[in-house]
Length: 65
Image 1 (tube, rainbow, N blue to C red):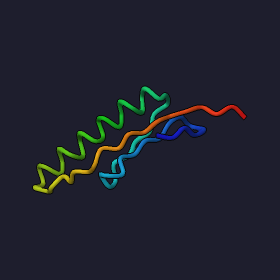
Image 2: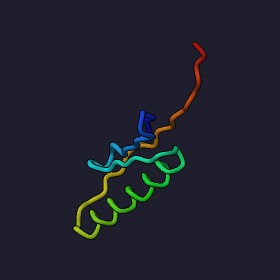
Image 3: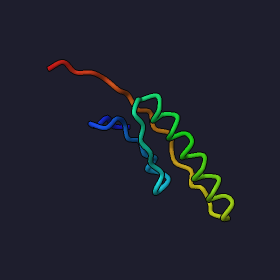
């Protein structure tokens, strides 16, 4: 997830074409969950496989400059 001038942008690199945006962080978290669910449902309905990746842990931190 990234913040820009218009709000927040999120993507799921494991699912090509799965991205969204939102005005607030909470909006974009909700939106990316919906986007992931919809992409997975569509791919399963089309008979496509959904790849499995290794779990990755991310950390956010603030740095004073």
